[in-house]
Image (tube, rainbow, N blue to C red):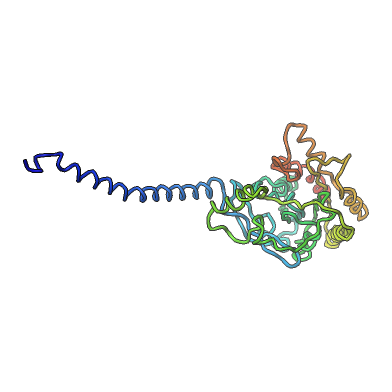
Length: 339
């Protein structure tokens, strides 16, 4: 019988041939699957989680560091905008655009800045701008001059560099640790993952480097708003910070602005038992003719309502609730100053 008439005669040749073809195809299939997973993961990380678009920073010989100007980022579902003067605020001109325009500058560190975990619309400064315009029926600009871990010398250096922008009111927000928070000018920008100076090539890589890798090394990931490490207070550092506070107040008044100082308490800090630095800052401000506004009681009111004004697991940074409490605390004093 011919091979054509015997089906079993072809089987030994066909089976090995199909197996060989299958073995040649499976690496390609695996590669395609891995590529699809990679592309899908990158798209998920970039557009759903919000990685890959961090606000960038730049080093500065006087200010130490600040955010790069003209940024509009989307991160973790939040908008983060910096204007041409590195303020986390709307665009602004160096001088008032109209005689009846009200200008308020709010100066501080990450407490004022909010970090990328706070949307632009949730910032105390954004809420102030909206409410003041509504209450006073006039154009209003509120500038958010801040960066993570800035201390009074950093803030003073910014005001020296850029001026007061014709401000009617200057609000300085200070925490107890600010009494010794002097700049070190150690390399941070482009070195520390919390101070990026360029956009990451891949959102997945940023997630690994900035959030997963620190955990693998036994540390903690970036909290998107640094607070300085506490250490032994040095008399020279205290004097440097008190001098900077004194000069910010004097410089603001010399430019014709009213000055408000607000003191922010950490989660475990109370007015009955304040942390080192609180009383020193208060005494300096009173000596300079300014009675500080205490934010602590407003945060405590939120807690009594069952709302936590701090970020989860964070001892100092306000969340959206805390930003609103800061707004509530500052609004009456600003309106009184301009009325």
